[in-house]
Length: 522
Image (cartoon, rainbow, N blue to C red; front, side, top):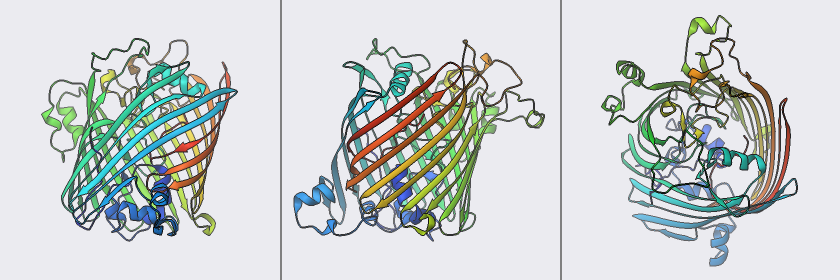
């Protein structure tokens, strides 16, 4: 089992903050409006040492009242304020938790369930080394749209390979993690099997945690107000439909590789900007030309004869007053300036953009959070001539879950009173689906040489489809250490086009845990 790390800083005991959006939003004012110039919000997970000199546990405690942390009853503390196993010594620490996700629900009269048993362990050794590891085993029966997705691609979104289980259900398991070493305050090394996220938004058009875990080696260097990340990763290329009834355990899946560079600069106390680049390539032996972590890889790719696929990006965020953050991204998969301004919709202009704003303590109400975000990606973005070079992993996009050829508007609001948590999301999207065997540019796994035309390519080409998704959850947090909660939820999904009008309504209740981002709004 591989290990997941938390960064150890020379400034004290510190860890990586989990990727969970809700947790990051709850700590948003501590993250965005801290005086520390070492906080680089465009690169997640955040280093807790940058946020404060507290440990992760202390940071979580700061969100809640102190009465439960002071209880002398052992059983009460284990249920409501401590890890299941917790050891804290001057030179090392260790924790272990059981992470359940047990839910029952209904969708238009159809019974649903999820039976997840997870474990997580972690710890710190000295001031420069830390680790954690997790494992989840799952069985579930899902809403129709979610089931159709699994049947079509053979994977559970963000959670790996699926196998049929019972009548209409699936069985799947996955694990992940990283080890990390910080020899000085300037550099951190990680080896992992997990996910990464670039940007300040709910979505990312550059690198998100939408797809399944992957192995990576990463170095992060910080000098003053500048942080630089270089990462080498290996991905699984599932370019064909997986027959869930004929899975073979003795045939390894084909691999492909990616190199990622991200430079983030806190230009002022309010303005931050970032520069991103990526190259994806088909296995051909070890590629020494991409080994240097500080080289600009796009010219190197050209020097190799342009056999690989490049992706470039920009990020920016600006702090407005003391409670608002505006942010954005620009993704460039291919760029032809003369065709952009011609207005003819040339297919080779493959770009995407994001704009958003976050509000903390909205209307001066403590713990009231709101976020509005817009994402647009042109057709054929992230795709390539060969599936080995597209921007995907395990049959899912590495960036936005919609792939390409879409525009999306998201609104999120949440409110917390001590351990009571209320969250609402509204998502509206328009996109073009492929029909009549034609490639209109949404599926990033299709060869872009099979495109329908060279010009007249605009967002929404194909079967024009609209999606409305809303989700409301109400929860009581039992244990902040592992986000153990009792949760009641409702979701509504409506997908409409000229061929169908599909409405689904889902209710669920259960006991959940962990800080994972599991996306269902697609």
